[in-house]
Amino acid sequence: MSILILRIAKTDLKQPEEKYDFQKDTFVSYDYNTKYTSNIMEAFYHIKSISEVHTSFGLEKPLHPLITIIRKWPEVAFDFSNVKITSDLYLLSMKGKIKGTTFRYGKNSYDFEEGTLVFLAPNQVASFSDPIEELDDSGWTIMFHPDLIRKSELVRTIKAFSFFNYETNEALHVSEKEKQSLLELVEKIHLELHQNIDKHSQDLIIQNLETILKYSNRYYDRQFYTRTNLNKDFIVRFVQYLEDYFSSEDLISKGIPNLTECGKALNMSGSYLSDLLKLETGRSAKDHIHSYIIEKAKTTLLNKGVSVSEVAYNLGFEYPQHFSKLFKSKTGMSPTEYLNLN
Image 1: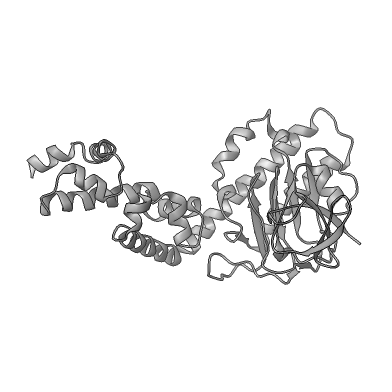
Image 2: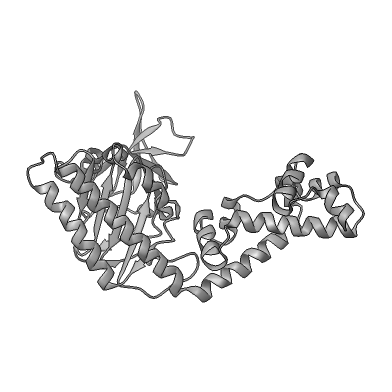
């Protein structure tokens, strides 16, 4: 019987940590005198280290304290659809032949069925819509702690790989050729982990890890370009979202929408939306929002005879001076100067 210690979100249970019985799909919690069970609603499981990954899933002791490669996850009789997993680790996971879960991008399905590559940064939430069964060991998962790269250049450059900000349903779909290129690099790291560690090991592991990320970045660009028509559809939907939002009561009650809210409205993360817009238009989501505000402000100033302060409040600004500062940064003149000129 497999048991994990899960941190749960429910507040009606007496203990913050409960033993979970995978076979019965239920928590078994204990107080001082009473033993009772409670059916699972939703649970959070936080993983702190590589060692904890191996212990929790019944794997052998890791070869390295800060990085591990798992070629095939052990079978666990557990419905993962009820659990959200977070960790202190980075995760790169290539799916091989699997049964039970169809990876989707937003609400759309795509080609590139040969493989799916998912990225997670520390403290991001991972979840599954239904149980996964791995049919072979053609996939792989690399998990590493930030301490592995703490003294390397990668600790700075890893922030440039924006796919770590994407949600899990925004996975990278790779071809068989691309999958093989990545596997060769994974096997180089695997080799380093399985031989005697020397003064070169850490650098070689990190170099191969960084190369995997660079190739993944190239493949993401390929995915963007091969989905040009769909990307343009996102632009249309984004513009429509802005028009609807700035005409609704939400503008007054919530203020100007942020990147996260915009992405959520289009069923993707804000980072991914911004990358799509940069690819197709050369401008970020933030630039688009600001341009929309400026154009709407110009129209309002010239046609409705309202004050600059009223325009600012009606566009979701709490302070008029913030609106004036944005207006001048985008047009080279203040709202008042724009009015006088026109």
